[in-house]
Image (cartoon, rainbow, N blue to C red; front, side):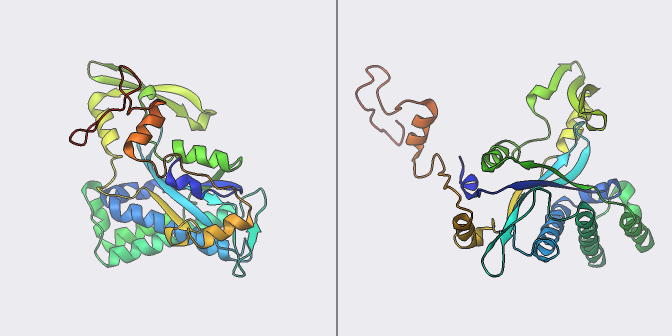
Amino acid sequence: MDQRKKDVLNAPYFHVVFTMPEQLQMLIYHNQKMLYNLMYKAVAETLMELSQDDKYLGAQIGFLSVLHTWGQNLHYHPHIHTVVLAGGLTKQNQWRSTSKRFFIPVKVLSKNFRGKFLYYLKQYYQQNRLEFYNDAKQFEDPKAFQELIDQCYNLNWYSYTKRTFSGPLAVIEYLGRYTHRIAISNHRILSVENDTVTILVKDYKNNNEKKTVKMKGVEFIRRLLMHILPRKFVKIRHYGLLANRNKKTKLQLCRRLTQSPVYQPKYEGLNTIEILSVLVNKDVTLCPGCRKSPLKMISGEP
């Protein structure tokens, strides 16, 4: 269990997804680091402001966000997955729980997220911080860019909540499995023949029906390379009660208020040799021959 998972509280969690409209995908791809960061910023401000509104929760929440840039067929599809604590800390330092349903209406969530992202995007344009290439060069013209903004304001941005996690252990499992996903795993690559690649996909619009997609090897590589994040980009980000500055203060208070157990990281305090012994389930410092005499360290190697 890594350091991140010991911060899980004994409370429900919601899984919320924020997606970007197709009209902005090309612009985001041409300005990846800046606009990926803007996606995180818009999500964070939306959740923090709405959760502190007494109409919805009236408390400070904790959440973490993870950027994914792909769909099942490896096409470019930037969106953010957010794990949201179903409750928060009031100004009086009291814990306030929520109902089984997500405490912010999805329409309100989407509208607020849309407004924040487009507000900052217009600022970036006015500050000449955006870059335009190929077909997107048309948006260098102020009139064309404003038409793009107007079009995006008139769209219903697709944000949704997935099922609530069934307890803290489910959150831990998600953190260990889902947050470190890549665009495609090996088991979905069914075959590589001559100059073609066949992959397995789920058709979400057709009851998750499994289908195969065959493409040229060059096209497969092109799609895959689109999902390499900018250098030194921080993919998993924590906010509110889960932010680093709050972990030893507000989060500890929430742990007491919710009577949450302490999840001890499995390898905390162990050195490299001790961790290796745990992983292989035997003492690696013993002689592999007699299994009694300890090995001696020579030049830093056992």
